[in-house]
Structures are given as structure tokens and as C-alpha cells.
Length: 65
Image (cartoon, rainbow, N blue to C red; front, side, top):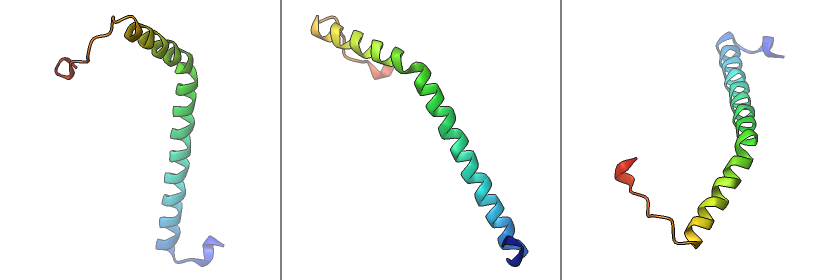
């Protein structure tokens, strides 16, 4: 099917497919990383909420980041 297209269109199509596949690979990598850190994020959020409840939390100083 692609062979019937002009060569420059074939090249554009191949490049588009490569970009699409790379985007899918990136999504899979992010999903994998998220799954590995999900329980840590939940624990950190619970700890932060508890610290806020106990009055131990301080406002974030964005100048120190």
C-alpha cells in the first residue's frame, strides 16, 4: 500500500510511525516507573496529611528549591 505513494510521502509516513512508536514506548516507561513508585507516593501523601493535621507542616519556601 505504501509503495503506491510518492517516496517523500512514504518517508513522512515512516517518520510519523517512528514518532508514534517512540511515544508509546515513553508512555510504557512512565507507567512502569509510576507503578514502582505508587506505594511510596501514597505513603508520602499520608505522612504529609498527618503532619498537617498535627500542625507540624511548614509552608513551602519556593526560594529554597
